[in-house]
Image (cartoon, rainbow, N blue to C red; front, side, top):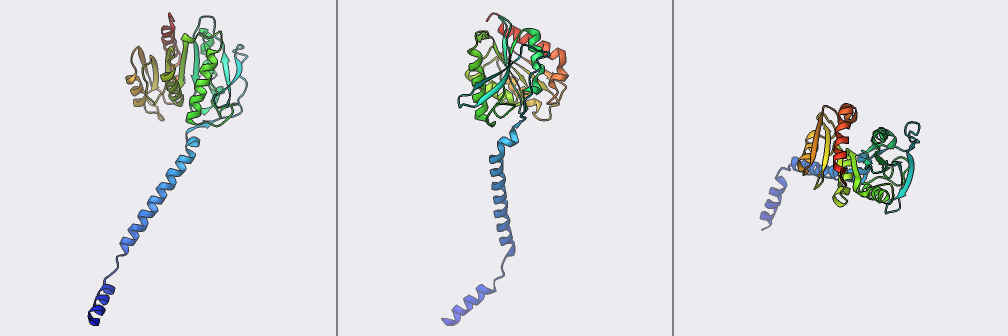
Length: 264
């Protein structure tokens, strides 16, 4: 019995080890750990990767649009929002504009000129964490900001509630659409959208050479929208839609908005 035991022990010790098994196991553990760390970093830094706010908001261009005002109101969670406001002419529609993820209101001041030309009201919404607004940007917070902007507009006697229009660019399209599902406007105007559109009249403009939001995503938004609707395909990139479309695009958008609010 003793000899058999010794022989079994000797046989086991004589079996060659397999170093590649140990190496593979170590590599698998290292890879899994690395993926976990990367995903954790993305989760923790997702707002910094998505939002690029610019602080230090300058004064609005009153030399060109003397009627524009700096207004403040609070979101439901108490965050102070600093926005720019151009009152409408009597009986004219009002636009609430939802900007993209970078910069601040000063980079959208050209919107004031178009609205002044048509006699439209315009609220350039200052998201939380952008310009002089308080707080820090995140997705739920921006949805609260949108609701606060609409509530503020509805509280004003010079704004006709049935003639409120949502206009948005890029990331702002998601904010506008989230609000539109709950609080439908007269129409929405989307530039380079990437989300889903439900049960609302819309005009969609998108550059076919968009390097950030693929054109097919904007086309999918348009296809999902019931009529009346219009799609404008521009030979532009993501950040030059307004410049590329120029007068033709602005005229088409104005015609669509006027048609949407007519008779309301």
